[in-house]
Image (cartoon, rainbow, N blue to C red; front, side, top):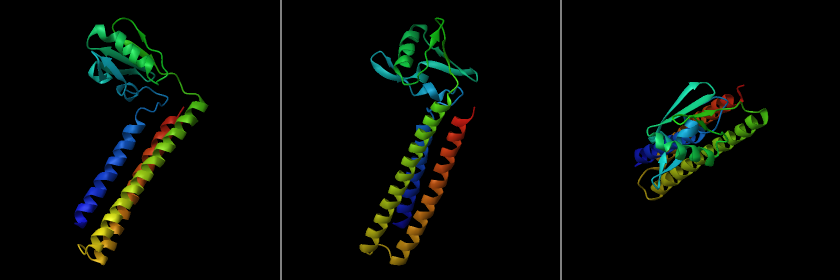
Length: 185
């Protein structure tokens, strides 16, 4: 019973860390990255479709993203989807390839993005703490039901705390790395 609770707790914390990484990917840094446009949903034959399913996304230069649709007829729909997105970059196309020039970030915009990263990191920390709370409640309930001993409960709570400490360190490292990436000129 204790092992199941610990495994579930560890799994949920890993999912929180993974969700944070995915959440931070589309946040724009000063350089081009396929993650900036991969999440954009394109209305394709009435169905929302991911950009990477309709086109090849490449980074030929540090500040340039090129999007080459698999079908030349899709270039207009992809361009409209980019314009509708919150990317803030105007696409240009030559009939075959869409080009997105990623402008350098202003100092004010860098600080704003760093604040967004900080908020998302804090949300991940809170999520990890909630997972700890849930695990501790399960352990307390198991002890009340006499499924585990009091000593086992306290030992398992220490392990849950260690899992939380490890997860918080990883979350902090991810946040610091992303903020450094954003603030880099």
